[in-house]
Amino acid sequence: MPVIFDSRFGRRDFLKLSSLAGAALVLNAGRSVSAAQTSGQPEFHLALLSDTHVPGDRLNGHRGFNPWENLRTVAPQVVAARPEGVILCGDAARLDGQVADYEELKALLEPVAAVAPVYIALGNHDDRANFRKVFTAHPGTLADAGGKHITVVEHPAVRLIVLDSLMYVNQTPGLLGRAQRTWLTTELPKLADRPAVLFVHHTLGDGDGELLDAERLFTVVAPHPHVKALFFGHSHVWATFRRDRLHLINLPAVGYNFSDQQPVGWVDARFRPDGVALTLRAFAGNRNGDGQTAFFAWA
Image (tube, rainbow, N blue to C red):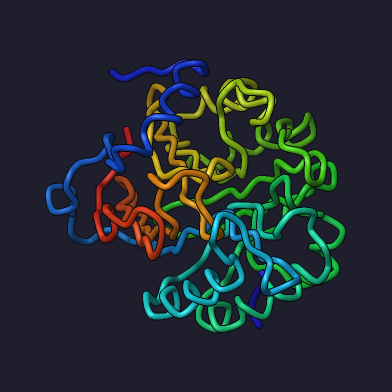
């Protein structure tokens, strides 16, 4: 297997909006794909998943959803889409990152990993040590920053940096930490030859259960205009925002939603040097936005 695996919002504004945007299920920062397409550009086709919450017990569920069955449903959809890579944006495991959770996750992802590398971020329901016991081979370039699981993915269209916000297992808050922020401060100036996009599990507001050093992350990113977007999960919400030039993309959950207004599904993404086209693939929950695509142009 190859793997396994000017609208300006402050942090309080972001927190309020993130609770509202899911109801509309609209990519309000986008424009039509047809208007944005440019010939001759390289394109990086990815499947974006988040919050799979796969349990070791295949019958374990939440809110009427079965996360194990949900990922079994999604896997052939992703295979059929034929992406060049897959990102799972944290909370891969059900609650506390048991070895059995990751064994089931790995088995479910085997058909996907046979066609594309799978890059996995770690969230608050993951366990770094148990994850590494099961996922012994990793695609991309692993970075060394205080023991965190950081992956850099290179492509002519875009550079992806998958960060690690796991602080405490099965506790809601997240933290990048000084070592990871220092690594970004050192490395980002060297990576300005193409657009860069960051992935992190935790939401970026100022709540006690979010990324506790989100504002420090924004401070690190601010001097680097080649950083175009931040993708994250955690809230099980499908929504998009802007903070200055940055696109902030909240990915829907695969495992289950927290609200009937939200979709359960994944996102088909096509990154180009001038932006990204995102298509929602909702297979459960609120499916009103299923198949809708919007293009987000890099500032």
